[in-house]
Length: 406
Ligand SMILES: [Zn+2]
Ligand SMILES: [Zn+2]
Image 1 (tube, helix red, strand yellow):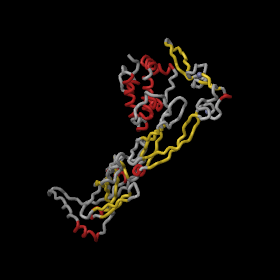
Image 2 (cartoon, helix red, strand yellow):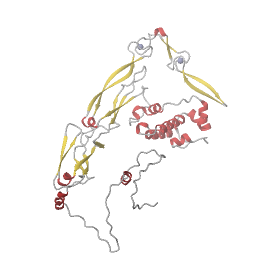
Image 3 (cartoon, protein in one colour):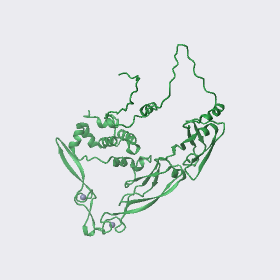
Image 4 (cartoon, helix red, strand yellow):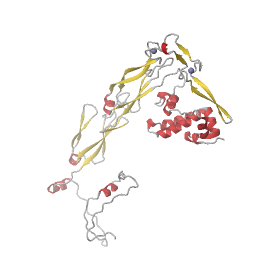
């Protein structure tokens, strides 16, 4: 029996879940909740913390026996940055489908960098330069941090970089690992006078590097460009990768749907009824001239496509289509003298409906609705008024023969 199930519930697993069940459940949830995917950062943090605890057999035992309270009493649960745990588990590339990196030599952290790219650049392709600051092995000391022989193993921790602290917690004795104070967790000490002057004993120096990022035609948001081994260097480990994540900037005229481009075009009533031309400024140095043939009628809300004028597909550069949604702009008023011309051109008016004798016909006028009435009728969201604040209503002064109940 476990004392609490909150952490298990967060991961949606039963308390008897195996370690691999937990990992699977966390991966599934984390991918959905990841703030980069629009998830709730707080929930992501909670789920990550739950996994952090349950994936550590020692912490899980404490939690099972004594719940969250037990964990906070035992101390040393500083809690990791959820992002760190996430990358540690799946590797920088894991999130983007590259698979985890559980085996193989140890690597430095991948460096993930997002670039915002315009739809124009994704349509035409582009090479952009990216300046990057990273650590490289100090060439003066070859990553040793000092003169040959100056680097000594820390005697406090025997080069392990950690020390074990034993704590008594009621009836239980717990061992906690802490970084060694004498060597700041590095396992080595260098005499101040023997330290490499160039890197100050740090073994690495920071360096600026230019990367050429090739944005290929047809790339999509979330796609990655990998620079193998271009992340930080550190002695004894392989450098991780620099991963560029492409992010598409929203466009003011086009919306991308797969390889299709959607756009809204406003045409005047005459063009809609009698044909004519309009243009669409494309994403490259072209404008498309579109003809509506006389005799064809375009209605507001009609959708047409222009073949082959969408985004190029990434692999073969086969283009998608451009999808045009029409909005027909009606004139505000109509000169009375031209009405006979319309009557000749358009289908006749629908006759006024006839009613039985007992129905009284009453003549009324059309007026403009007030602002609230209009927005309600249009089905708009209520305007962003603070809730709880009284709504101020402006009432028209009532005229003499008011029909309003008093
Ligand atoms: Zn030490
Ligand atoms: Zn150095």
